[in-house]
Image 1 (cartoon, rainbow, N blue to C red):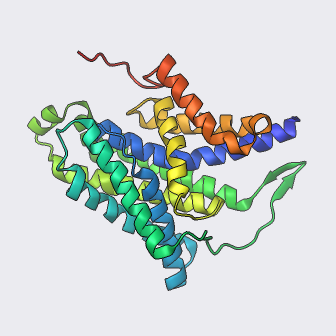
Image 2 (cartoon, rainbow, N blue to C red):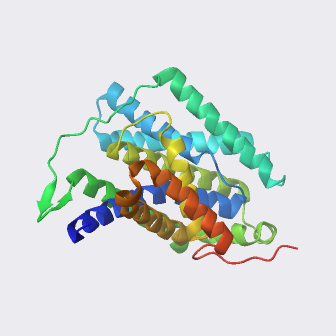
Image 3 (cartoon, one colour):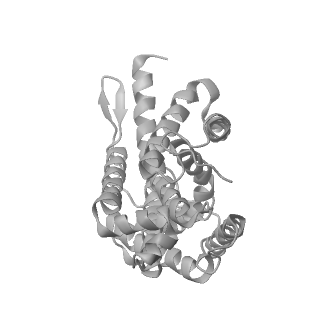
Length: 291
């Protein structure tokens, strides 16, 4: 492998990492506050991608407007799932919410397959040529995807670390009882959190659909890399989730010449298993003692 091949793989890995970071961050926020892995995140991505396809086909709108519309739709679906399902399971064992999330994911996937079929869809995008810099090939579409993902992650980090919403969210994450005693209204805060999680998942699905194709299984196939990135970065750490996604996707791309593209998902399983065995807290996670 030449250094030009290495740079091309590195660039592709970074772009994919920024896309995977969106659902990984969404899962981290739910895990850090609600204390269960939201297995429906992948199918929320699929919901957002198909909503954008529908808005673009039916309304004839540009992709950016369709993406905004899909974020609103998926945010409402996400908040509705919290109100109808996960809010009522609060306080029960984590496995109850996790199984409910798996069931919700199957429901969303089945509804999408029933109404949209199993055919692959694509967004209406202009055909562009890749820029060639001495063998280093960069698609303008990939640059747009990376820019949108990076800006979105920055906006979320500003919300988490520089606003009252983020401070209250971190307080609930540290101690829900103490936050409630301090006058923080958890109901509205949780609703806002799940709206944000839905919007993040939807945007991740749209960007993934721009880079590949839109299919009913796209979100499910992205769930394992997102979950592995969350565990690698440290469960409950937003910065760790993004860092884990970047490291994981770069490792997957650099392993393609050795393993082939078909085994990229296997590498996610390997990374997940190694992290759980060697350092369960992840890169930026905190080790907690359980009595």
